[in-house]
Image (cartoon, rainbow, N blue to C red):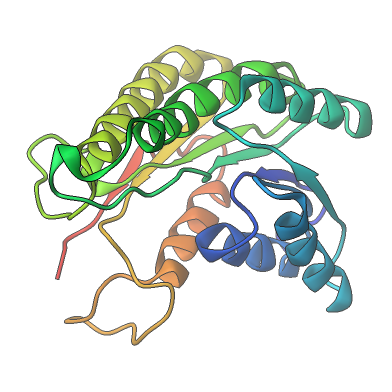
Length: 233
């Protein structure tokens, strides 16, 4: 179990890719600190891990669109652990709608606040715990919608904007933290399937994205993988 003793924080861990990452990392011995917008969702994943005897898992509420919730989550983590080895910035609200007028103002505000402000603030407040690790990694689950020239998703323009902001944040963070030995790894998956056939002509699955994350953080410390980009079916 190559991640035995590794302390991992995952946002958006109540479902989808976040849940899959939590289960996979727990199976490899990691101790998980899981957050979701609703505490009950994070608890379900933590209980699933504990029921399978996979290792330690702790559940927290963190609404990335609410700065106070982000600060409270970071404060709680500081009370229960002296360091964080891996922060996986996975939580972000997907917003569908090709037309700018498709969504209400509040939906747009929440999407941008969660993916951008929430990710930045959580990373900022957890940086002291990350710096205390001997093997620190920050993983950002961005989206192909955050790549220049990508137009293939039916996501709302606000989601595209939020993901471009995430990509810019990750890029400068990687540049500035490289000298400190902190790896910043970003993934740009297209719209994906949670499950399904893992075949050449099929859409990318969440399981394959999880494989990429585990591969990257499992590399020796001289290996700085900056990003994963994917061909789209």
